[in-house]
Image (cartoon, rainbow, N blue to C red; front, side):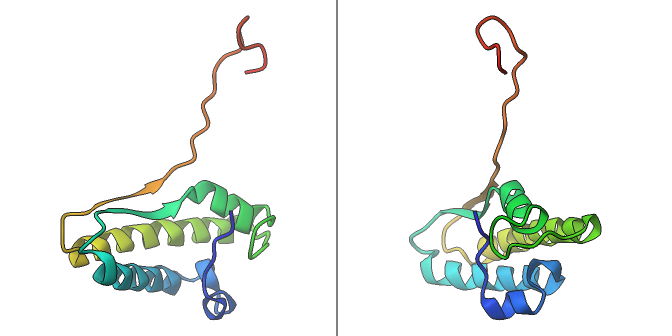
Length: 119
């Protein structure tokens, strides 16, 4: 799943720059100001792990980059920072008490047995 952000932000460094985290929080605040009187359930990011791996570690999703470990870790930090700042912005701007979080992609591992020989 690609992580879509405005081209100008991506060209300025995108998620490799901490400023993108703040811009995301500003965006979240603007959306909540517009819709917060009707919406109470908010998700900041969907499956950060897959976004990070596909966009910046493996390069198979936009922006299609394969970055070194240090930069990968900075991207992951900045996305999590963006989540935290967006949660604060959503809570500060919602008309009603919001439920806010992110979506994890969980992999369940089971030991192999007679019923599940490939697990």
